[in-house]
Image (cartoon, rainbow, N blue to C red):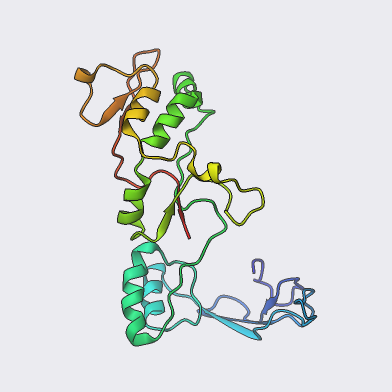
Length: 224
């Protein structure tokens, strides 16, 4: 419902803003001319009125947990999940894990067009990108970051898509530090590398160090 600053502006959105100017509370009423209907021919939307209350982003989880919102999908993260579940026992709110339309919550994209020629060569080397992928323990990330309610996967299309294939989600997504070392471009000698790391030196002798256990959430992880 973007572009609603002018309350007199005609819109194709399902709800129409009727609160002019800047405010702490905005009211959106059902658009009587909305052009969509459901399978039975009933005009949408079903809800007649929506009220938005402006609040600081850091206060949204607390307000949602206390039941001050009927529906709150934004400004909530997995770090709020435990708090919301505990609050639900007294506030009566229902906490649901909402499937997003993106293929992953977290994804790492090497810059294949970087201005630095040596970095560009490294990032465009499929062996390096495969090594980077299998060096990430997605199952551990799921347990630590997503409280074991996520689904480790590549960053790909959603399973419900007719274009989805299982190998899209699993190819080069297994955690295999030894394979990562073999895939790395010209790995340095073991004596020169910190334990649990791989070094990919470039043509101008600049080393690129990568920690193999990778305990930070930097590779694709899909939450369902």
